[in-house]
Length: 241
Image (cartoon, rainbow, N blue to C red; front, side, top):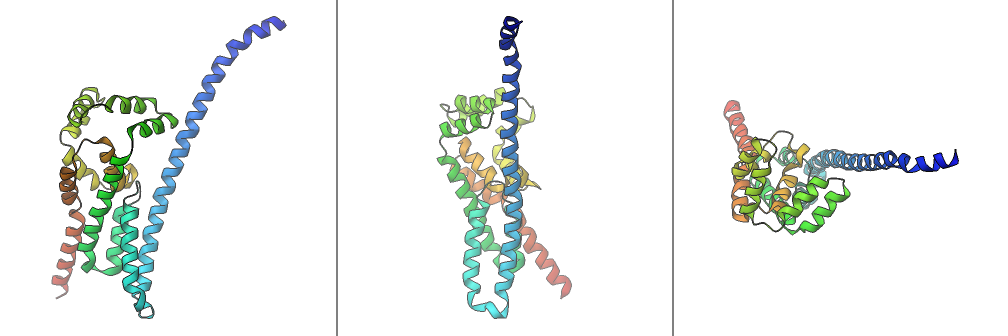
């Protein structure tokens, strides 16, 4: 009986190892999702806080700190919008609602600065470190993809991804990646896929778009919201006149 039990132990260990690996991977994914949710909720609260703080600074009792608050708010806006998953659109609207349409051009330039910062940070991320991060997160396919793309040029990376893409629409996105970047930045709820900061950081990590082309794309991609705000303000003025 004892020998039978000892002989059966190796057999029993196999499924337990599989269960342990599955549980570990589930815990890692759960941790990533938890951090993801905290960042999104935290970004929304930060947007509300910036708007409330600026409204308080506009009050007659706090006029002496008004300009200082504007500079601090713009600095925070640039840094926060550059962070992946932070809802930059909401932060920009909070600034505009607090300070009026006169600040729209400044918010537009600040948004460009934050997206360029995200892109630059993405370019600085070593591909080896990125592969290790995917490995730790239990994503072996992403790890292998980074290892395969590492030695390739931007054109070779595009061709490789187009050949191995599992979905038919992915080659279209790769072929027209500047247009795809513009659409993703303006996609409603883009914070769920990384926000402007996360999207531009991913573009920088991919090294598939040069900086001049990236700057052209985001310059056009960020325009719709400021134009909509300014157009709406003009229409309101005409109707109230």
